[in-house]
Image (cartoon, rainbow, N blue to C red; front, side, top):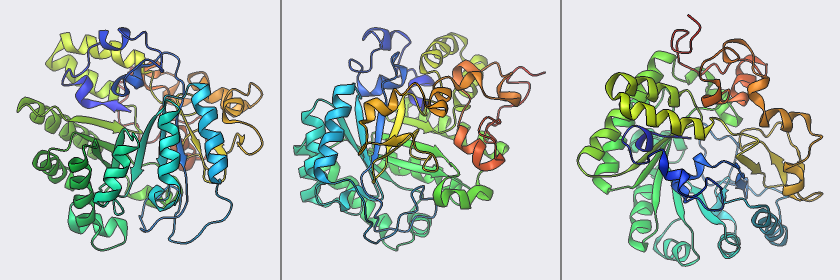
Length: 394
C-alpha cells in the first residue's frame, strides 16, 4: 500500500511514525504501513457468497449458499485470538460480508476487543438503518468498490443499477458520520474512468480512495491479458499523482493510495527527485519504513472456511486452519517453509528483482502475481514498470 497523498503531498512527514514508536498497537490507522513490528492486518473473508458477479473477483463468489463457513462462535474465537496476538486491524470482506446475518455481532466483538474493524463491501446493502448500525457498533471505515462510472461499473459488476446503489451507500455512510472511501481496481476496461472517479470524489467530498493494481487471482486471473502495459501504468500513476495534488491544492485533503504494486513507491520518489529534492529525501525515509510488500508478514488472510493465507489472493496455498490451530500459532510457525521465506522474500527473489536498487523498499513486489504469470513464485513481478535504468541495472 503506497500513500500517494502521504508521500507526494506531504500529508505525512518522516517524523510522524517515529512519534508513536512505530509499534502497530500504538500507531493511528493512517500510519500503520510504517510500523516496525508488522503485526498483521488480517483480512477475514467472512463469506464466499455475493449478490454481484464481478469479473475480477479473487474469491470467485456467486449468489448461492456455501457450506463450511466459520460459525459465529468460531468467529468469536478467531477475533479473540487476533486481539491477543496484537493484530491492529481486522478487515471484514467476502464475497459480500453484509450478507452474513451475524456480521454486526462480529464487527462489534472486534471493536470491543480493542481492534479497529473495517469493512470491504460492494455497498449495495448499505441503506440508512445499516449505516447507522455500523456507526453505532464502532466500525472505523467502509471501503466501497467502485470500478468506473455508471455504464462501466455496472458492466464490471455484472448487475445493472449497482452504480446508483453505491452512490446511495456513500451518502448513507456520510449521513451516519461513518468514514467511507472507494476501492477501484485498475484494468484496460476502466482505466479511462479514473478522471471521472476523481471528479466524483471531489463532488461528493469522499475522504479516501484506493486504486488497486490488478492481481491475477480467482476470476482476476482471467483478466491477465487485460492488465495495463507498463507505459499505460506509468500514465495512470502520473494521473493519480496529478489529480491528488490538485485536490490537495484546493484544500481537499483526500487520502489517496495505490495498492498491490510497490513499484509505485520508487516511482513517486524518482519523480519527486526531479521536482522537489527536499521532499524526495523525506519520502525515501518513509518508504524505507514501509518496507514494501508485506504478504505473509504484515498482512494475512483467513478464509470463510478457516484456512489461513499470506493474503487474500493466495487461496491456492494454506498455512493451516484455525479450526485446528489458532491463527497466532499458524502465523508464527517456524517450520512452514513458504511462510518463513515470505517473511524474508528479499533473499529469495530472482532475476532483475534480486539486483534491483529498490529491493529493500519494494520488498520484491507481488509474488503471487509472478507465480500466476510466469509459473515461478520467485520470478520478477511482471507488473513492475520501472526501467532497467531506474532500478540500477544500466
